[in-house]
Image (cartoon, rainbow, N blue to C red; front, side):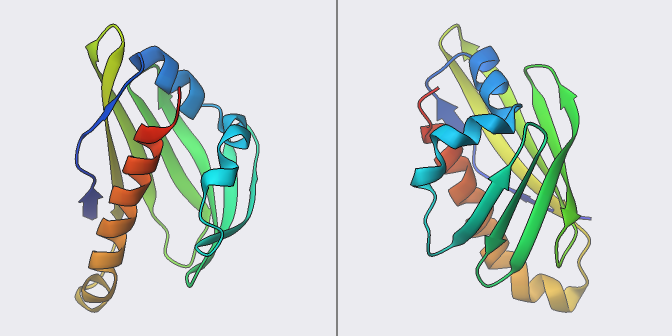
Length: 136
């Protein structure tokens, strides 16, 4: 399994607050206007899953498959041209700050790896930056 990891991001909010917001996908309602419309369209979600159309990939649906309170949220694909897992990991720094890292894991052959490595690495980094910037 190939893994693509973001850099560690500092989040100016308590670990418990960040976890509570990210583990209930209904909270996306507050930030969906910040998602670039040229990259992501037709965003829909409920508490446990989200679906988006990503240019040029197509429709992707993710569902929360496991939660480790305050430390990790694990997603799996339900619909995707390339099945993958996404983990959001949180670690406390202080009472008012935490660290966040995102990891994408997927099975790739050598040919596919060469094609998707850079876009996936860039994507996981942009996602982590966006999640770290949310006002929690």
